Amino acid sequence: MKFLLIQGANLNSLGYRQGNTYDDTTAEQLDRMLKQHASDFDYELDIFYTNIEGEAINKVYASVAAGVDGVLANPAGFTYNAYSLRDCLSYIAPPYVEIHITNIDKRNIKSVMSVAAVGVVQGFGIDSYFVALEAMLRLLKHEPYQNH
Image 1 (cartoon, helix red, strand yellow):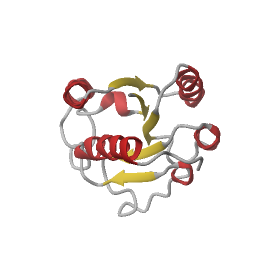
Image 2 (cartoon, helix red, strand yellow):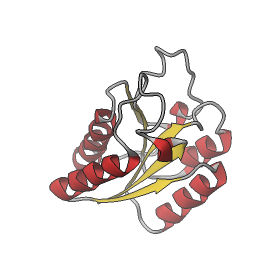
Image 3 (cartoon, one colour):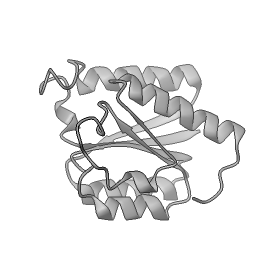
Image 4 (cartoon, helix red, strand yellow):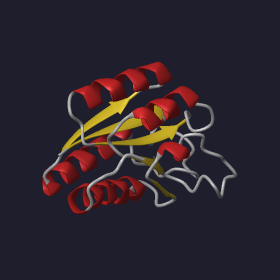
């Protein structure tokens, strides 16, 4: 199985910002942990960081054309206003799972992206990524996905 993980606006600076909101795990450390998870659970994971919404859209369409089985994203700074990315994720056949390190509802943040998602995992720190990946694996292994 092949998954695409979009790491949205400002996530390239993980570990170097807002220590009271996010833990001190860097993007590089998180990537290593995610790649190890992919190896342990026998799937391919393409991690794509971008601060530009159009680049994320292009990457999603290219990945779908290449046969990706699922798309996950922590939209981060795109959460509030990435209507074009949301539309892209709504149009594709593979399932999309949204990830947030913090509980964005507790912070009174409304995601414009979540309506395109089969599910949203939030509030578990970096463990949110692993919960989301395992949920995606279970979804694809145990239930044939129907167009959302």
